[in-house]
Length: 96
Image 1 (cartoon, rainbow, N blue to C red):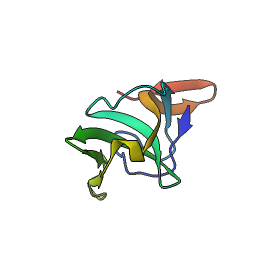
Image 2: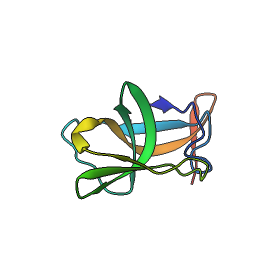
Image 3: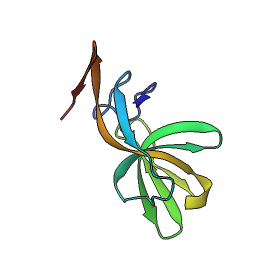
Image 4: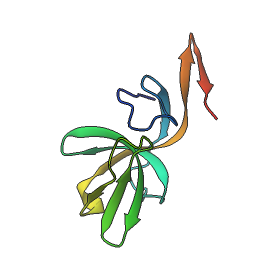
């Protein structure tokens, strides 16, 4: 489980929401899926796609620019987002 600390994926995933990840170190990027990953010693939550020899890094929030990373080997996938929502007590209320 991962707790968001920025609003780059808003309105899909808001600041303070939780995401549940599926971790598979051998998994390749599934174009258009949401991932938590590290790049240059920072942790990110973004939508990723592979475009020939670049990784396209997209935010949901239009205030954030689309970024491009030169090699898929430059990032370390922590996990693919399989569920997200807000915590209310002991319960995760999934956003649809």
